[in-house]
Amino acid sequence: MKYLYLLSTLLVFANFSCSQSQDTTKKEVKPKFEEGTKNSLLWMVTSDKSRDTAFVFGTMHLIQKEYFYFPDMLKELIKSSDKVVLEVGDDINNPLKAMALLRLEEGTTLFDFFDDKQTDSIIEWAESDLGMTEEMFRMSFGQMKPFAVVSLASAEDMLSDSESYEQTIMEIQKKANIPLEGLESLEEQMSIFDDLTEEEQATMVMEAIRGGEEADKQLEDMLRMYSAQNIDSMYLMIHEEGDVLADKENEFLTERNKKWIPRMEEMMKDRRVFFAVGAAHLGGEEGVLELLRREGYKVTSIKL
Image 1: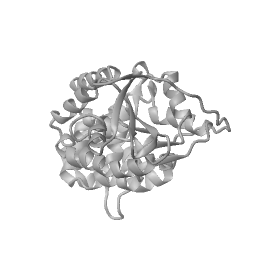
Image 2: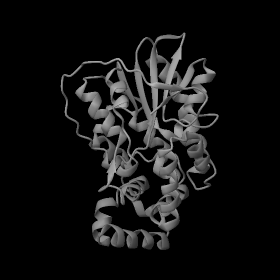
Image 3: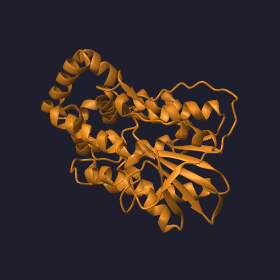
């Protein structure tokens, strides 16, 4: 459940609307740097390969308001950038494309992934947690991929009391009229879930809807780690989780990180770039920060 929470991009609810203005003023920012610590969500990236500086910020895609922290210094770093880069770029504002990618092929239904007992559990969850009758749920989700249910379950308890780092970053980016790009396409991101076996997708849904008190406590632990900016502890917590998604760590984290590095390098050439990716991608020996170091970049933590 913890791993699911970090990786889910909540595409069903990704219709972010941000106002745009022509305020292009850029301010010089002098953040406090701390070398040799992993307790940070914000990192400065420099190299002889580029005359400019990049910043990498670790997000949680949806977070309870009490843990949401977005200081003015972070806002000014974004506004002083030449480009803002998220995991997925402007496609995050395209709910129709997201919905199309979430739809199953003709002749297949959501319930083909589950046995009778699992189906009963899903319907019971929809009735008790969502207030939807079986008919309503089948009509709304019958042609959707299992990930749509996972997204709904992930967001269910937080939609009324949550914030989005991506949405906040895009609001600043649009107001400052800064270009927005993505490290991967929406199709690439969704294909990760499509590549799971039917059994793995069914297990993923069952874990999402059967969370209970233990999952709530685990999520609270993850949020506290994020608030403490301890990216390595977050990575280890995911690494040792052992659920269906943690078992796919290579596909969900490592391989994506490796694909991102050359794309990041190209984007950083003589441009000041602000990258924002899920915090789970930062920690560990195969995390974005360590991979950048291996390519010769100096990566320095910034105190928020």
